[in-house]
Length: 328
Picture 1 (cartoon, rainbow, N blue to C red):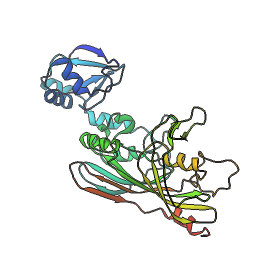
Picture 2 (cartoon, rainbow, N blue to C red):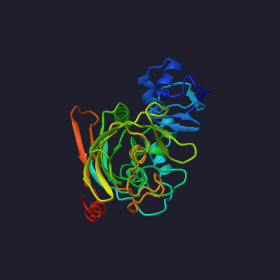
Picture 3 (cartoon, rainbow, N blue to C red):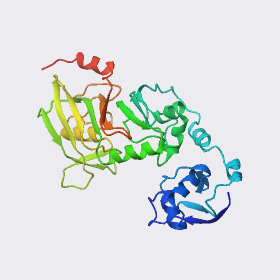
Picture 4 (cartoon, rainbow, N blue to C red):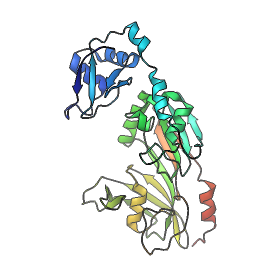
């Protein structure tokens, strides 16, 4: 594929979609550009991109083709982008294989029940198999889905490693953008069960502490509403009270990183099993995972107008612990 010139993306064009940016630069119709990108690919930072909705970052180098006419020779020499993307993701992984437990699937999404201890996507410090790896192994087309497919193919939301429960994964770019928009606009209902250390003062409350990243603690912190931070809203109802713990049902109205853990830590009642959000000298119940489970996910699927509800039962390991506690 011959190219005319290379452009470096500046701050003004950052966050634009590749197809939109090319249409502005060339006056070629977006539909024609989209077809070209899918069939031939456009080079960004030296690698072929075949997803029209790929987002640009400041500093990216994009090669603009001389022509957007699709030629046979381009198709013959074009690599199998799906296979290439899949191979980049399928690096040798350590540790046990992920149990990919499917709750529901159609042509657009896969809904799964994630086990505690499993990462949702790869990190710089880990080389273990993740939910993303398992999804790509199940459906290789997912390897090309997302804003940054090599890092988070198909992933539109996350659960902490030590949290279990319902997750939804996009199988194509259109579904990814649809779901991403719904999560961003809070058109998704997420509910959790949690066991907290200590006793809560109220049976029902809406927590509105702002969430910010701590500069020195290596975690998030919850702050009063008047202080800097991102809006975070957590609503809870007490389900059961025990001698030294409280079981709650949680409705997440926002989805900040570690929101539940940071909010209840701020109340003085950290989640049982949490080794990051701890209160010194507080008597805690020991558990090798978080007693936190995402049991309910409610949203309208791509192409549908009515809401669908997906649920996952609380793992037996967690209910076994609560059964051993003394109720009050």
